[in-house]
Image (tube, rainbow, N blue to C red; front, side):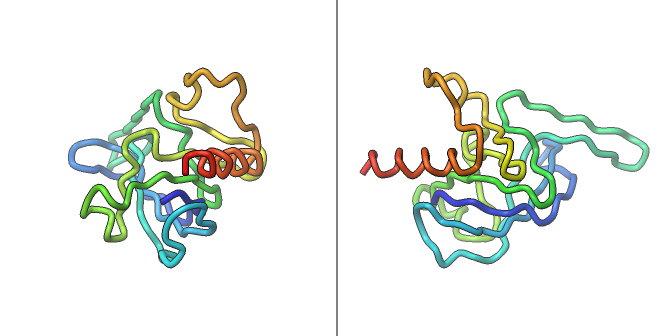
Length: 141
């Protein structure tokens, strides 16, 4: 499932023992996969800065795209067929390579693996990113 979703809520916390941010997202544009999954979903990013009581938590991970703000969009790559876990509201992004952050229409933040794949240029805008993803998906059929 390849789709663009808007971030509507951010909550700090833990997934198992890993600190990070839980994002509530609403699918807006499906590029490939089911178009009928338009309800709210959740994804966890193991990065962020937050406090628990008086204790500050700062979790970074250089392989992930930048953490989106509320109102930003994310481009997600979710494998719905490989696991039973993808049937609910919580989506697994296959680590860092499953999420690209789109800050408004101006800046796109990629996982580190996307930046070192031998391509000379990376998409700079939302429109260019989506165009290139659609081209890649057409070429992989």
